[in-house]
Structure formats: C-alpha cells, structure tokens
Image (cartoon, rainbow, N blue to C red; front, side):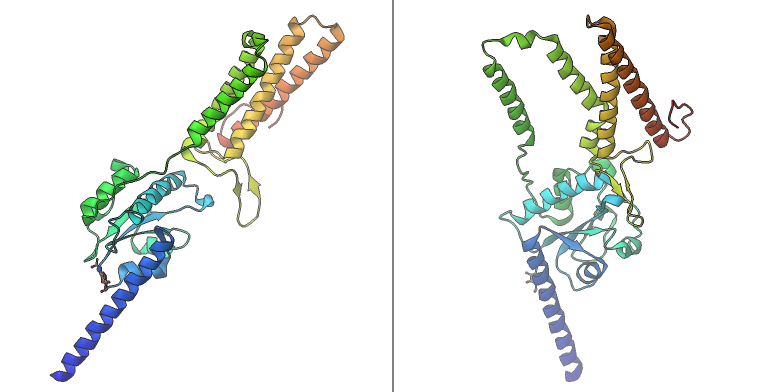
Length: 317
Ligand SMILES: *[C@@H]1O[C@H](CO)[C@@H](O)[C@H](O)[C@H]1NC(C)=O
C-alpha cells in the first residue's frame, strides 16, 4: 500500500543520509590524520554497523609503553607511511579508510573479535563480514608498508604507491663524524702525530666495543621504552625483570659499569708497568682493584636480577 511504500522510502532516505554523514565524518577525520584512531564506540558505529559503502583497514595494536610491544611501534611506523601515501596520493577517494584500535582504548573490540595478538591487520570490506583472507598474515608477509599496500590492493582494488619520507639521520650522523675528524685533522695539520698515537686508537676501539656490548643494537632494533613507571605505585624501574627484554636506561647502566671495570683494569695495568713513583702506583693499584671489584659485583647482581636462578654472586647479593 501507499503507507508501506512511503515508510520504506523514508527508511531508505534516512539510510542514505546516515551513510553520507558517516562518509563525511570519516573524510573529515582522515583530513586531519591519515590514520583514524577508534575506540569501541567509533568502531561499532563506523565499521561494524551498516550502512557502509567503504572499506576500512584496521591495525589492532598496543602502543602504550607499559604493554611493551616493540613490534607495535615499528608496525605503526610502516602503517603511517602506508596511510599517508594513500592520503596524499592523487588517486585518493572515500573508498578506503585507514584506522587503528589500541588495546588500551578499545579492549572491548579486541574481545568482540576474539583478538589476542597485536599488532594485527584486518580489512573490513564494504559489504559483508571479513573473510579469512581479510586478515593480514603478519607472520608470513611482515609489516613493511609495501607488503601491506599489496595486500590492500588485493582486497580492495585500490593500488597504493608507497612513498617513504627520506631518512636523513644516518647520512647526517656520518657527515657530522667526518666533519669532526676533518676538523681535528685540520686544526692539527702541522702535527698529525696523533694519528699514530696508539692511545687514541685504543680509546676509539674501546668506545666501540662498549657501545656494541651494552645492547645499543638491540635497542635500535626493538625500540624499548627508556624505563618503566609502575602506574599504580609510581615506582620507576630502570632494569627489566627478565632476560628476554631490556630498557634503554639499562644499557646505559651496563655501559657505565663496563667502562668502570675497564677503567679499573687499565689502572691496574698502568700501576704495574708505568715508571711513576711507587706511592702513586700503589694508589692506582688500590683504585683499580676497587673499581673492578665494585662494578663487577654490581654487574653480576644486575644479571642475577634478570636471569633468575643464576647461582653466582660476588660481594653484593
Ligand atoms: C558512499 O556513499 C556516499 C553517500 O551517498 C557518497 O558520498 C560516496 O561517494 C559513496 N562512496 C563510494 C565509494 O561510492
């Protein structure tokens, strides 16, 4: 009858208005940030509930420092590159949106989807529910932006050309180092003797060894937080309680302790071989022994704190 026809029409019209409202809102958010942050409420309204004529790619993640998800940070960097490449591409349309749900803002979404690992990527197609291939196989493909772009291309027929922002940090550091060395060589151009000085070389080699053995490379790759502050007690810990992980502060402490032990060894060696008077050599000897014993036992106690069940200690427990 006319009545039902009319109500159906009104219903369809309201759906249409709702859809254009949603698309308008998503475009607005994307204009501000290439990756939209969603909590449970936004997820239900813009991703779960119809009507929808757009795809949403969502990264489920846990970026809060206390979650200690180093991989999440790296995956996030790649995801931002992907979303920005799309956002600023000339082909940009309202067909695909990129969003993220952080565990600490939308744990209900994690629960609803039975999600128990982060980061993970899911494509929510414009029609119907996500299928198996709408879940990105992170273990197999890795999280490089190019791989993600290929997957998005398969799922949505939107092809994204990944554009990486140039990284100047490496070349800058190298340039700085060369400038310092060049400057030194220039300042002392009349006396390049220092290039043949074995102490200079020994010191540089030592610095390199100390940096490499204190875990800087691990920090560089895994990107751990500097330290951890317990949110309930407010206590800050600088040493991670397990041998599976570490904080940046920890590597600085280990670097310091290793240097102190090395310093003690050098003092001992000097005390034994130098031709200073015997009084000075005695002082050097005692200082050297003190440094080595104190910092070595400190190192051991840190190791014991991390590697539970390690049986040996020295001076300190
Ligand atoms: C989806 O629908 C809205 C509202 O009608 C429209 O503005 C938008 O262009 C549509 N998107 C696509 C990809 O067709």
